[in-house]
Amino acid sequence: MNVWLDVVFVCLEVLVIIVFFVVHLGVSIPTGRFKKMWIQGIWPKHDWRAPALPKFIHFQHLLMMVILGITGMLIRFPVFDRTPMRIVHYVAMVIVGLNFLWRLWYAFFSKDRDWREFAVGKKDLATLLGVAAYYTYFSNKKPHVAKYNVMQKLAYDAFGVLMILQGFTGLSLIMQPIIFGQSPRFLLVGWWLGPLVGGTAMAGAWMRIAHYSITWLFIIITTVHIYLAAFIDFPCTLDFFGLKELKLDPNAHAHTDEH
Image 1 (cartoon, helix red, strand yellow):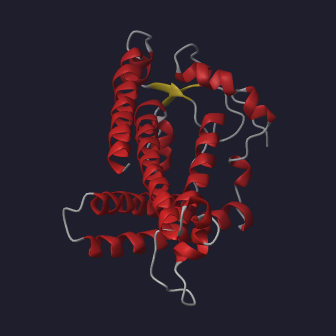
Image 2 (cartoon, rainbow, N blue to C red):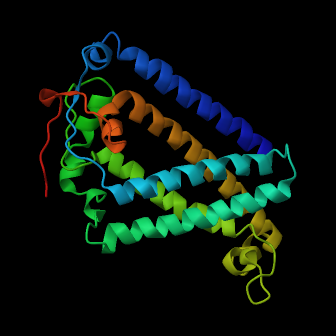
């Protein structure tokens, strides 16, 4: 099963790279968007800068996710001893988990709480076709109703759900009896999923498949995120890093503030 997953997801990752970094970027040349943005320096308008704390959390999260991805692959394909890779993986897992809880606290309970910026409302859904048309070159206007467009909101919300699932499946792989004489595997999936699939060991095997699959989904989503940040929403990336803004095109951004 793992070999088939390797083949499917490697092919999917290669396809994503070709579609975005070759096809999508290539189409921007005859449409004139590449010239307008990268030669003339005129970009769609972006009107906000990330606060310091979410930015710090983001960098921590990014670093730990990279470590988790690398160590996870070294556990799957053991070039080195798996034991130190597992230790580093578990430490990074704990940091990511705490970081995720910190970000949730910031979003819902801090004085600068920003959960509404990620909530998808009727106004967001009404712009879905317009945002899709912009990214597929059928339109030169990218509608926003908040700091993030509807596709960004959906992607960030989906990423949060995947984080929870990845944490659950990852903990389900721990077989050591470290919680009152029971393993996290049994406590999370063994007692209810085990009888359905043929035992706790088989339940753990299915969790391993899910965990590995979600790892590849993170890799694919990150690949798309890097492309969009580097080639499509570059002013937003500059703002995030606190760098100088580029010249912005107010006609390329139909913005309605819903707050």
